[in-house]
Length: 156
Picture 1 (spheres, rainbow, N blue to C red):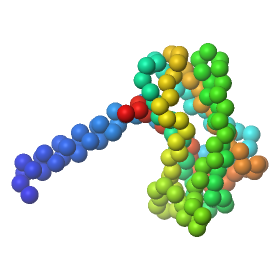
Picture 2: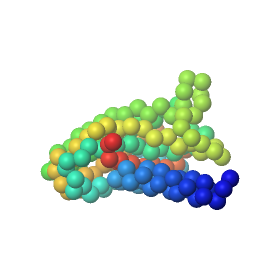
Picture 3: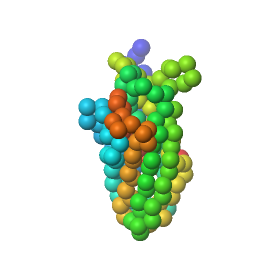
Picture 4: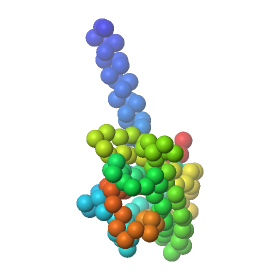
């Protein structure tokens, strides 16, 4: 392969990577301490928003250990707006299919999955939106959910 072709291909790869990253508006992942999520603990994500015109897609990012006992994960999601309005969602996340195969990508016994929460949502007011996420599995301690994240991208 000629040097020119290699340079062009490398340049296109960089453009593609940069293009993908520019869609992300907010990304934050937090580890769940020792892979044990207590029933009385919620995770909080604070998202500063100035753009009230663009539409956004909101995703939850979940990482589980292959020893997780269930094929699903129930979550309670509260979205608090800067005006004090609260939106509550209950979400079932299917982590494995009917045959018990983990969904998403994985290696080394860890599996990552991105779950859509909302598509083409517009934030009506500028300010900080707070997303609070509780596990709803009725376990005093839910084991083997290792990380939880929130990703918001500008809708295309």
